[in-house]
Length: 567
Image 1 (cartoon, rainbow, N blue to C red):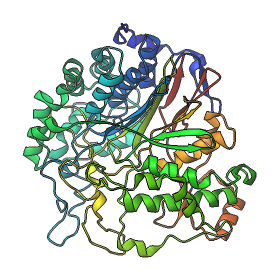
Image 2: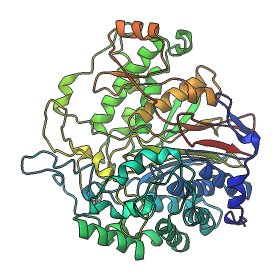
Image 3: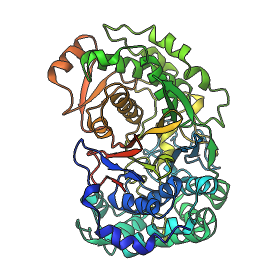
Image 4: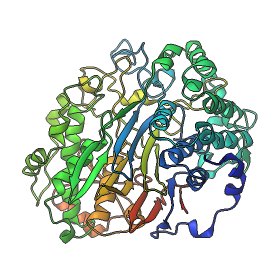
């Protein structure tokens, strides 16, 4: 039986072996287990689960619950996400725990009398909250593939919440904003995040979260029902009733996660396993790899203008497919998934690429397509255990800190994922606000996502575990990391740290990380017809490579508190 992780929590927070630290483009190396996540305390907890006999699923559950305490901007029990699993025995599966629309949701629920979105209600306020899926997804994964006792996996997160940990500098902008909010809707949020509900915690100050600890205790002791029934469900439902929200105890009791087949593709002898709908990530990733496979990419040089041109053209076409076809498969049974990920479809798309000039994104398609806004605030974790079983897990609250709403007595932030639905059915304007059926709001429907947890395998064994936050940029971040390793022979840390670009069909503009691409390259790239905007960092990828029986972990330096830890 797995020895209690909670008993050693204090030790692991204080003592981390120097050999576990990552330095720039040099990955962490281990031979028995590896955890990479967005917060070092969560990575340490996951590593201790592995060290004491847990498998990759066990460690993912413990890490994810710990992130719900230490990374409130994205780690969560009030949101949802996806998990891809690849066993050392070759068994591959995935878990869909994307949020759902409440039973009372309607296609026009966000619209005012003028037919336009009222007060940004699809992104702010109680109507923006979808029925959370994280707890159900982690519970289902544990029931199917877990080894350790459930309570032992949740207990470290309970202790972190109750006993506290040092507030991080990364939270300061949110805390300062929250201190200025007086709206009663956010009263419980102030109680959870501010000292005595009023004063900002300075970096390094001990921060305790007793209400979150109590919610996690109920999950620890009662499992799935500790969140979706009983006290937590009643607290959430009562809060929604008081503030005009839609989520009820019935919504929570009806929520189910799903075990589903992942999307599968191939690329130069590698097998690509990524998330299936309602994530669009796996389909778009495989489509782009299929388009790029015949090109001699290495001969162009990494991030050369010609290489970036071909990346952009593959992104343009995959994202057009994404916008037109993908939604919740339970509501869109005729999605052409097999066609979209086929080599034949890629051949057709590739035939329209001019290797010497950019092809425009067809603006006429705005008459039938709407690309809904999607936040870049998400988090990802990658884990491999001593037997070589691998987990790639991405989950989110949507915006940073989600809706910023905490229901009284619960201590956890709620998502604002309803904003990922198309909010205005059938209306077209110059902003591209158009509603098409695949991703319109409907009761119990899951909203479209770009989360792309991915495992690349070689010879039926996990080889790369890849994932990142970043909204729609996630898909292109994952693409470039895979190419960096498979085509340009980078180690995993080099692949993660390398500069990235992003194009999503509409708007017809490519975003470069401000520090990453040389002026000469940009000039040549623009000369063949591409428009460029500069942005800050793109994504925060946390990845693992398995090679020659060793594990190589890389926590993206773009992630403030991220860490790769192995043993």
